[in-house]
Image 1 (tube, rainbow, N blue to C red):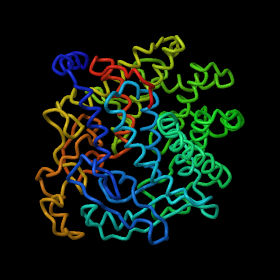
Image 2 (image 1 turned 180 degrees about the vertical axis):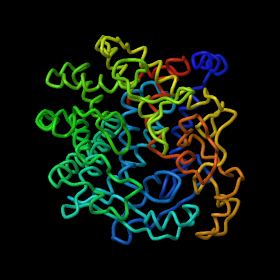
Image 3 (image 1 turned 60 degrees about the horizontal axis):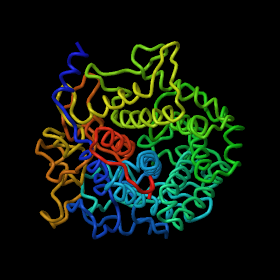
Image 4 (image 1 turned 180 degrees about the horizontal axis):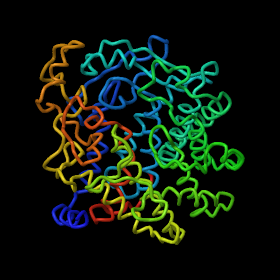
Length: 489
C-alpha cells in the first residue's frame, strides 16, 4: 500500500529544487543577530544584540540565533557552520547564483566564531540566559533579558564545543581558500589553535555550564566524537600529517567504530566516518581504509529490508529518529547519503550489506525520497519548508516571525506581552522564508501549533545540510547548470 501511495505522490509533485535551494539559504538572514547589512533581504528583521559581549568586555556582536528564541548557542552554531561549509565544498559547483549567498551565510557565522575565539585557550560559547529568554516571548529587536556571556577555558574545559568550532573554522577555510585566501588563512590558523585547546584541556562543556546549556544543548554524546571530527577537518584543511597521525592513533578511542547512527549537532561520529572515507575512496589513502567499513555500517542501517537495517520510517516514508526536531536527522542523513554516493561513484564501488548490494544510485533515491517528503510528498501534502509550495506551516515556533515587525509595530513589545500571540491560532505575520520546522510525528501527523516547539520550531542546523542536498537535486533534475569556474569560488 505504501508503494502505491508513494507512486501517487511522485505523479502529483514535481519539485522546484532550485527555488527550495534559494529559500533554504535565505532563511539564515532571518536568524541573523547584530548589525544587519544593507543587502539584507529578510527585511522584516532589524538590528539586534548590538551590545552582546559587553558584560565580559568582549565583542560578541553578530552570529545566529539558533532557532525560535533569542539566544546565541555556540555549539549548534559551530555545527551549522561546518555543515554549510561541507555543503558548499561538495556541491558548491552546482549552486550557480546561490553560491555567493551560501558563502555569505557561512561568513556571517565565521566572523562571529573568530570573535568568540579571539582569546587563547578561551571560547565564548553562549550569549543569553536561555531560561530567562524562554520566560519571554519578544522580538530579538526588543529583547531586554540578560545577555549573559558564558565561556569555556582551561579551568572549565569544553572539548566538544571547542573541537566543533575548530571543525567549523577549518571547513570554512576551504570554502574561502581561493576567493579570499587571506581570510582562509586566518580561519585555518585559528582552527589549529582552537583544536589544540580542545585536545589539551579535555572535558564536556555541559559539565561546567550545565545550569546554562542544559537541557537545551547538553553534550549528551561526550566530546570524543568532536575530537575525531575536528581532526578530520583539520587533516582536510591543512594536509598536515600530524592530524592523520592523530586520527590513526586515537580513532578507536574516540569512537570511530562505535555503532551509533544518529548524526546531528551533538553526535558527529557518522559525519567523521563519511568524511574520512573520502580520503580512502577518492584520495586512495590506504591507512584510512577502515573508515569505508565504518561508513558502510551506517549506510546499511538505513536500507529498509537489508540485513543490519535499524532505521525507523513513518507510514508515509519519513526517516524517524526522535520526536523532538526529527527533521534535523532527515536533512543530515540525506546530505550524507548524497555525499557518500558521490565518493562511491568516484571510486567505482558499492556498499555490501550482508550480501545485499547497495549502489550509489540507491543512496540517491533514498535521499531524494526524504527531501521530497519534506517538500510536500507526504500524506498531509504539507511542505515543511516555510514559503515553499502551496501549503506550509503557518504558526511556527519563532518569536520574530510570530510578532508584528518593527515596521508595522514600532513600539516595544514587552517580555510577557507576546505570549498572547504565541498562544493564539493566528498565522505568523512575518514569513520566515526557507525555515524548516521539526516536522511530523511518527504517524505523519503535524498539528501546526505554535506552542509545539518539538514539531514547529525551525533551527539553523536543520537547514545547513539540506543546502547541499538541494543543490545536488536541483542540478540532477536539470534546474541548475554546473559552474564553469572553480567549484568553490
